[in-house]
Each structure stands twice: as structure tokens, then as C-alpha cells.
Amino acid sequence: MTTRPFVGLARTCPWFDEVWVDDKPRIWQVRRLLSLRRRLRGGGFDRVYDLQTSDRSSSYFRLIGGGVEWSGIARACSHTHANPNRDRMHTIERQREQLAMADIPEVPPPDLSWVAAGTAAEFGLSAPFVLICPGGAPHRPGKRWPAERFGAVAARLAKRGLTPVLLGTEAEAEAIATIRALCPEAIDLAGRTGFLDILGLGRAASAAIGNDTGPMHLIAAAGCAAVVLFSAESNPDLCAPRGRVTILRRPILADLGEAEASAALIRLLPSA
Image 1: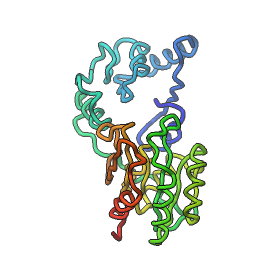
Image 2 (image 1 turned 30 degrees about the vertical axis):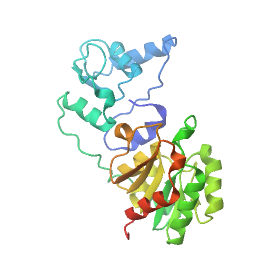
Image 3 (image 1 turned 180 degrees about the vertical axis):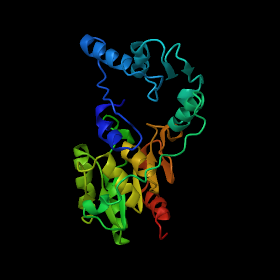
């Protein structure tokens, strides 16, 4: 069960027999809550692994009724993640420990060999290219490195014969326009890539650089070497992407110089 933005990815993965959409019914939406309860209780589940462990997902423990084992933090569940410091753990370590307490001692990294390798060609890209993710949560501008710095990095990459490829959504249109003004060679894929596309591009890219934003987690998971930029707005000890990742952090991200970021990125390139 996952929320609607992730359904397509989940249904493409080879790991799930069935994918349910969680439309997150509100407490006053009684009919939708009753419908969800009927579905949960009719699912015939032996055990539920709640990896979201939010108040909302924990409330589903009460909806599903008795007789079903539950791994999570819901009160009185059968397999509680009983670590009082769980909120100070990196998400991956937290979930790994939760699963260990539910009799799953080994959790290997995800095998993404099923992701299509031809994504780059579908976008007309040829190696070598570097992914750039200049976006971030719109309501948290402090997590964004200035677009002009990304533009300078892109220009430096282009001079080395690498194609900068810009990822994002329509919300990043202004930042991407700034980058392309400084580096006309950059290719704009904003608004054109889904989760699977980003994974495929991550498998083919020479490296990547970006803010603390969701696509960087996918890119790193795909095995791409990446530089990820953090400000005081978020803590890499809790939420940094895992993989071949270099973390650069400043309390105020604008204080991070372009030369330092470029040097860190160039060190990750295969020819460096």
C-alpha cells in the first residue's frame, strides 16, 4: 500500500503481487474510512509491516482489527520497534532495525537491475552526461543552492566535454532557466521524468549533483556517484541518500562556493 504518486513505480517493480492505493482518508470522511477498513479486514493478512510509521499509518492498525501481526509503532502492536532513539536514526538504519525486531535480520540493498537501461537514449542523451537537480521543497527555500552556482558547475562540466542534464518539475522552471542562460549546452528534462526515468538516468550518468531532494535518493540508489548539498534545514545523518555519495554542508547553503562543489563532483567522475 502506498500513496498515489508512487503507485506506478510500485506496480513496475518485480517485488509486489498487488499494489493498493492509500488515498489517506480524513477522519471526517466516514464512508472512505469504512471502505478502507473493509478492504484491510478482507485482505487476509498475517502480518503488516508499517515502514511509514506515521500517526496516519499507525491508525490503520486499529482499522485492520485483531488477529493481524503488526510491525511498527502502533500502540499494542505485536512487533513494536522498541527503540526510544528511533527518531534520531537514519531512515535506512531505523527501518532495518525495525525489520530485525520483526524477524527479518538481513535487508540487502535494492536490486535495481530490472530498471530499463535504455532511458538515456529515449531522451536523446549519449554518454558522458551529469545529472543536476537544482530543486527542493518549494516551502523550504533554505534547502536550495543558488541557481547561479549550479549554472557555473554546468558550464564547467560542459567545458570538460560532459553534458549537464537538468532534472526537476515546473516549480524549478526559473532556476533551470538561470542555469541554461549560463550554460546553453545543458539539456532541460524538467517535467519530463518520472521515478523510473530518474532511476534509468541514474544508472547511465557519469555523476550527479543536487540539493537534498527526492530525485537524489533515486539517483544514488541507482548506483550513480553523487554530490548532495545540505543546509541547516535538514540533517544528513538522518536523511542523506546512501551509496557513492559525497555530502557538502553549510548552515546557509549560499555560503558554499561553486569551486568546492565542482571539485567534489569532478573527483567522482570516472576519468578523474
